[in-house]
Length: 326
Image (cartoon, rainbow, N blue to C red; front, side, top):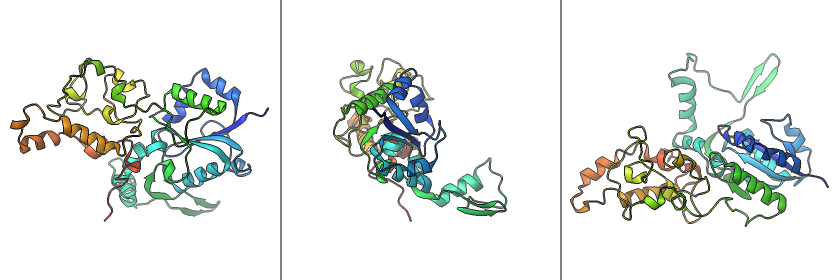
């Protein structure tokens, strides 16, 4: 019996999702034994024409990580969609837009100007910018077109399942692979991780006070958090209340607050708005009757980069999606 054909593709991301596949350790041997990897540009020498030559639907499943930032990524994910029975958005950037999605706070012109002209380490007196096409003695060189905005994968193609996380943990990856191989998948469109919020799994949950109050706002470099206390109680922004569980509380066990990479649960439409609401409901509640607007504004203003904090991984898939254009 022929093995199921599997593809991996990397769009706009840091490469951590590719490392996550390697982090399967000895389990990767089980995967390789069970499937036939037909496309994995970061690790194996396949060409786009190899995929183009396949029949539609011939690939059992394509795991696609990274957000969609340029025309090449958009073209290849559409090709993989056509050739694949299932497409899994792999990791935060593919699932929600991720860290690359924060670029949506700026337009394309501003990004290129910063990257190629005004960044402190750039030396470019002739203000040369990347060109889509350049004629050289050897022939014409081309580059993919840089898009105006970053998109999550399902804003470009139909996606069957989502594996959340920056990067997805090994147990979730193996669980997804096993479910696919055994045909034991949930409803299409499901996120392959638990539905409850991270606070439900937090190892500090039992020590959380009955009435949680956030008296001040601090940044992680300003204090050494007490490992026995809720981060919010200590004034640190933790996105646990607005974030899906399933990560084994990796950051929290390392004494760092949740940054929200697993995205919202099914009940939450907008992760950033949910978190802003959660903070507003506990900020300065103690002595509320004596809490002036000036004092409230003083504390709120301590939240550094609120948009980037609350939408760190989810801006392209949020209600905001991008900065309002002039």
